[in-house]
Amino acid sequence: MDLEAKKSVLRMFQYGLLVMTARHGDDAVASTMTWAMQCSFDPPLVAVAVKRGTRTFDLVQAARAFAIHVIGAGQQEIASLFFKHVGIEGDKIGGLPFTAGVTGSPILVGLPGYLECKVIEFVERGDHPLFVAEVVEAGVRNNLLPLALRDTGWSYGG
Image (cartoon, rainbow, N blue to C red):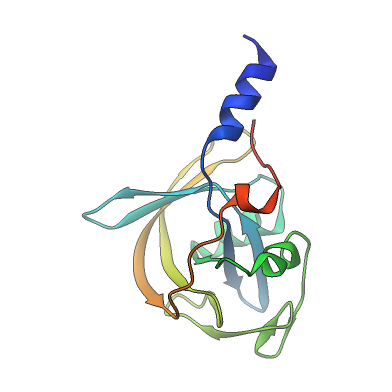
C-alpha cells in the first residue's frame, strides 16, 4: 500500500470539530475530537472513536456515558482549549460554564448543540477504540454553523 496516498485520502474525509465531555465521580474531562458519526436512526445511536490511554478514554469507559458538543464557526479557540487537559473549577471546565446533564456529563454552555449519550457497546480495535452509544438527550443553543476541521488548517487522520 502507498502509505502517503492512504494518508492523503483519509485527510480528504470531512470531519467536524466536537468537544466530548464525561464525568465519573469527582473527575471530569473535556476533549476536542473529530471521529464521531451517527450510525442509527432507531434507536438513535452514535459511534465515537477515542484514543486509548487518554483521560477521556478512561473516563468514558468508567462512566459509560458522555456528551458531544458541536463547535461553531468562529469558535476555533474553544477547539484549541480542549487539546490539552483542563481542570474543573466549580461550574466551569477550562473556564467555560457547564451544567450537569441527565447522565451527569458536563453540558457546555455557549456551544451550538449537544448530544448526551449512554454507552451500549465498546469495540476494542486499533489505537482509537469505538464507543457505540444511544442518544438520550439533545439540545440546540444557537444556530451557528459548525466548525469543520478543514476550516482551521489543522489535520487529524491518515
